Amino acid sequence: MKTTQKLSVIIPIYNESGIINTLYDRLIAAVKTVTNNYEFIFVNDGSKDDSFKEILALAQKDKNVFYVDFSRNFGHQIAVSAGLKYVSGDCTVIIDGDLQDPPELIPELYKEYENGFDVVYAKRKKRDGETYLKKLTSKWFYRTLANITNFDIPIDTGDFRLISKKVVDALNKMPEQNKFIRAQIAWLGFKDTSVLFNRDSRKVGESGYSYGKLLKMALDGVTGFSDKPLLFVSRLGLLISLVSFVIILYALISYFFFNQEVTGWTSLIVSTMFIGGIQLISIGVIGEYIARINTDVKKRPLYIVNQTNIDSTEAVELK
Image 1 (cartoon, rainbow, N blue to C red):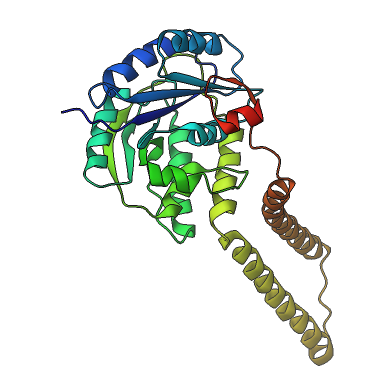
Image 2: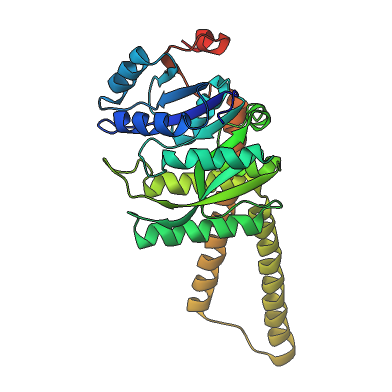
């Protein structure tokens, strides 16, 4: 039996022209097995192709299709955050627009939501179409992040998930500019579970996540949810100070008690460069945290909306 609850679906879009209509058809087929009360919110993240034209065409034929068109590319996590501001459903699905995450999994996600879970992750059994290096670095990062935070972050999951309205409301109260939504959801601590699936290869175009963007997201995750890098830097500084004190003590004892001078240009240069390198790394780590503070203090809008068909206070303010 179908539910009467409203289901919202957020779809961030970046250069997905040629696949949007297929995505829409599969979403409709999946969602209508759950409910006839739905909304699709496409967030166009500054696409340079015909993606927005295709979204406009869908909105004209389906009154349940809404769009938020950014003035430029603000990034995937920002696009999802924008969608969260506009949803009105009792629960919300976040799914990428490249069809690597199958819309057909939505009924299974909703079934777990009906069992009382506020967060239902889509957990990957395997990931087609990705290089071994990307799989390895992703696996390493998420396991490292799980070890340095004081809360559990599910591994082998992306942003494809279903969340309840109270999770959406809680996320919208988190004002930080450097978004890392999957860690934010884990930090909230609501009751969660997962559904396994095989992730398909990308159907059209190339991934918008370059290694540079992945590195930035990793830094956002680490600096936003763990202070252990700062603890590591301070303890490393203490350790080097102790080692330096021992070396100084050795040099003084050798000179005054054994009449020997500690010489060696090579050892001097190596030790100087080593300490200099540690200092630069330490300043860099501290700088990452300061940069986050600086970004938040500016209080600039998280994104700028070029146009939208959603009639809301926020939409009017940002247009």
